[in-house]
Image 1: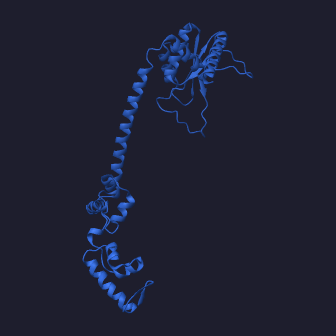
Image 2 (image 1 turned 30 degrees about the vertical axis):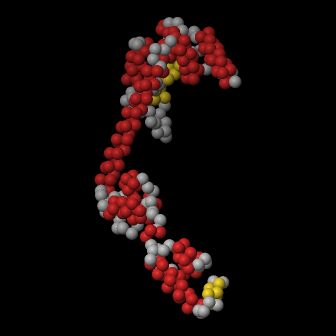
Image 3 (image 1 turned 180 degrees about the vertical axis):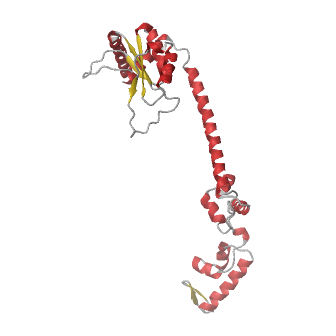
Length: 293
């Protein structure tokens, strides 16, 4: 008996037995047998020996596992030959760039479809469209939100104005007692809300003093007229404008025609009103604290 992979086959030498088995294995392989079928037919249960017996013989087609990405691969190669970029192929086929790279890396790189100048122009155009779309979406959101806060009740305006003053108005400090109502702001809408709030509280217009604060190199006269028109008074009733010195080392961004400085509104004889405002705010804060417990 001759030994093959730990077994003996009678009558033949090891080499002659292997060659005989190989001839039979090759014949079976070419006849369309799978490795498992050849193993069972020849009773060869050693995988290493079995693979050596059929070495060089391709497996039959029916034993090949279908590759789910074969169609994608072929389509990717077609598109690449048409000059498509990786990004375009990815969008078209929905597969990763790494897979696309493996599939088409042997193909020539397509010539650029656009010159650098054309590419930059396309990018600018695309960015402009994106920003316009975003602007339109912002406008819709703001318009919807604006409708949600229309028709304020007196109570809502009262609470809103109290919070507005405590955020933006002058406040008394332990080290600097300033119990007077004074409001400074550059936002016209904030000024209007503040004045509506004072009117709700019964503060007569005659008790109000106005003053503009602005940089000295701005259009002072135009700013004064703008604020006077906003609060519906003659510019002559304004107190002397406070001019801010320009620091040449500072790069200011609040410049141009839209820069009008700030409007200062002071309520005469308002110490009592200030104390009430502080009390109102303390009440709001206490209620909020209770809600958070």
